[in-house]
Length: 240
Image 1 (cartoon, rainbow, N blue to C red):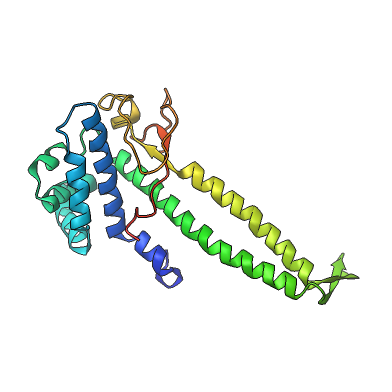
Image 2 (image 1 turned 120 degrees about the horizontal axis):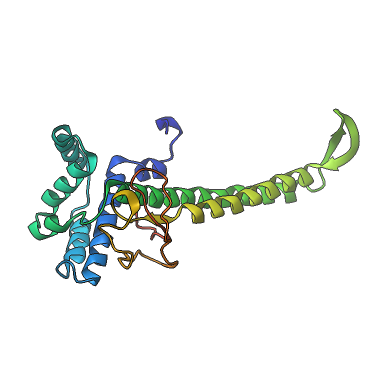
């Protein structure tokens, strides 16, 4: 997004630091799912989440990822190495990214950020709708010339026109809500999406509601993406 058109909230949400914070959250909840299966030591996820609260990922972390990526030439390898360093917890670092592929983290985090972004848009939309309601009431008796075939017709009111605008925005609000629900999925099924390294019973628990059984045939939005599972990220996700 061009900087001069960004709101401060959107700028923070789509910053590099926010993206890495979301990646780290996905890694943490993946660890929690492995703990539930008894495949990794208990408490790793809680330790990682606690460290992220105590020491949020910032610009210095982003610069460290860039330094490592210049050597590894792989964004997720650089990220996981930087995250292990950042936490200072060798055991957490040993099990980070277990069974996962890059797109599991990148796609899931991207979807979470899109959900947050749409929530910001919907919040602003409320103000637009309220303003249109106020204008419709203020101008319900203000006359205006209606038109048909490009020429003047019977009179109408500016208030009615504002109500028409309001109805259009309300329809758009419903479309945005459906889009937010559609994009709010977690894409997690390991390399090439075939559950070879991540068993279908492996189910990360996200903040909020979690439903839907995994699809037997994972859809592929990009190489390595896996089964979509509905989620509702908490407002704290994204670091805004």
